[in-house]
Image (tube, rainbow, N blue to C red; front, side, top):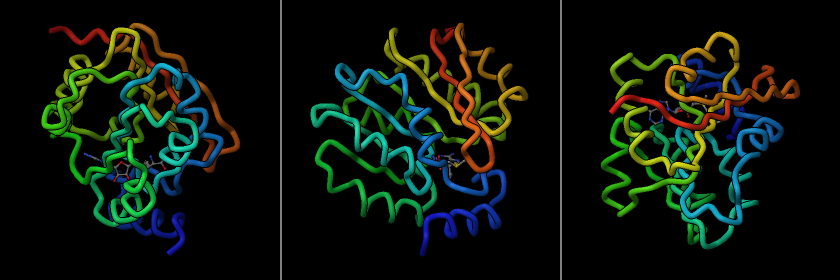
Length: 192
Ligand SMILES: C[S@@+](CC[C@H](N)C(=O)[O-])C[C@H]1O[C@@H](n2cnc3c(N)ncnc32)[C@H](O)[C@@H]1O
């Protein structure tokens, strides 16, 4: 089945758990990873990969030495992601919930991540999960690292990310359907 059709079916069935009617376009996918320093990144983590449009851009740009962890909860999306990206030696696709992110990384001996790229529907997470999630991000993100997040409602949710980061920049991508963009966040400030 075509990626867009599968994605739409999932959205129709699961609504806010998928949170978009279509996969990110190539333009939005590129905008989301545009700040990644590919030459120096040691570990890149993608969360909520869906059918993998951002994963595709990562695969095109990343060095073979960089470890890439791709997390997705939906089993059907994971079948696609594993078919396409597990054969790449430095990629690992994990089927699981972001609630378990800290354990998943610890089990793999990963204590620091340079870039976190997220398609997760964070605004629709319960407040306790949002808090716990950003506490994990605080613990693992390198001091020079960046958290990037796709969004279709830039102004509505900017406050949420500003609560957790000193610096939040938004890049708009009108060619996406629907028009969308990415927040690029630095300097996490979740209290310890
Ligand atoms: C808006 S879609 C983004 C998909 C893809 N990154 C893109 O840009 O097209 C959100 C994705 O996050 C996944 N997701 C939602 N909640 C999750 C969770 N708690 N843990 C892991 N993945 C989750 C959904 O299954 C869905 O694939």
